[in-house]
Image (cartoon, rainbow over all chains, first blue to last red; front, side):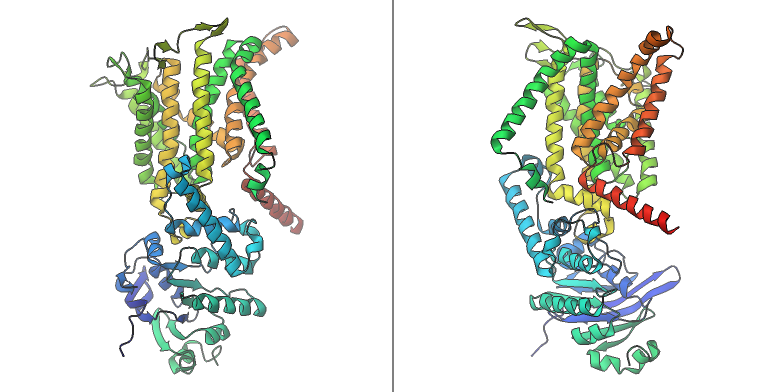
Length: 258
Length: 368
């Protein structure tokens, strides 16, 4: 039986800043419905790869195909329209908007009302607006922070801000949700809750691409992982196999993965 | 708190009653002011209404989208000249304002996009400097477009601009209706009031819409906004265009109201004045911006009376009132910003923003 086409296939992505090679010939495949982990020491190029995939950076060379479309060279908002949504390592919410409004902004790419609809308050605009509000409440409930809907995003606790970022990203109806260190700064309980949330999202048909330092979380959650070191992919495969890979142990100085 | 809930605190009947009372007050206002303070003050109210239009336009650019524009008066100029050139003896064309006002808005909107496009990658200080330059370019163009072909009549400006006309009624004439004298300032008051109310409604509706949220999202975090699928380029240009449109309409009305315009009416100082109205009133809040426009138009006029006060108190005018009043005006601005940094009537989120920063500042001081 032939394997179904991967959701995302990255081929030979190279990106350098000045003389610094942030990514060298990175290739990997993310299959539909899986949770794919991207790990590696600090400065390995994980976030750079995310920025390339979401259109924030243009790669020097290389290609990636997402859901049958070449997305290299597109602007971030086009990438979002094709179905890649992301969160940020250093949370980037719209701080002075309410939690609800943050999620409502996420609906932007799936809605159409323009200036004239807004000024004339046409029936189409009003029903679309009502649908946006309804969906935003649903998503806040889905990630478990609906009680903070009216509060400003900047006033939420750290963990709730991470959840809000996920809700906002889900509002764009992504096929692939890319999470940049979602568990950073969380305690064990919060990390566990996050793990359950991510499994629930995967269960609802969204593929997850995850940068994470919490090795326990990665090992327990991911179906497959790729390891980056100095901008090169040094391993890819099932977590259990990857953690025994000598090159990976070398990269982590034998310490944190043992 | 859900803002909708607080707005619904009045029953529909009470709301209608409130609207009726406000409408009656607004209708009676110019005649009451005329009787109590004199016709000059009706004219000041007219100007204030034009500034409301301008300030609401700038509020879209600065308040919602967070793009600091120091050349905004250029769009006012573009609207004024579009109207003046096509409704004056300058070219012998006398178009109808029903055509010319929308045309002026359109031309200003196009200018908004043309001047906005090169600035898309700029933020904050850099954007401010470039827009300041654009504002000056427009003014200098208008000042020099009298040679080799005379288009704008240069520094002499354009005179004898047509007033607004409704059927056979020209608004630069006085009319008597049932014993009530309707002077030009009264007629223009109602036209300007209608435009200002329309601008308020449009601003409020835009604020609470998909586009308005996109503007605020860009103000808050442009990278995150683009990652959420917002086409930041188009949405920013839309803000420039919408803001410029308000300015263009206002400019056309100004030209018809004054009957005369020259490049002198559109200086950097005027741009800064409009920006002051937005910032001082309360950036991003329609009510605050309206309040700012009214106060900053009325305050310099009210301060003209310091000459009379000197005469009454000291028996002579020691300091030229025109010098003193700008001094006092500046002092008033400084005091208002010291005591109400978020504006006189800030938007609810801005108020919270400043409160947080205050708390943070206090903590830092306590820790030091």
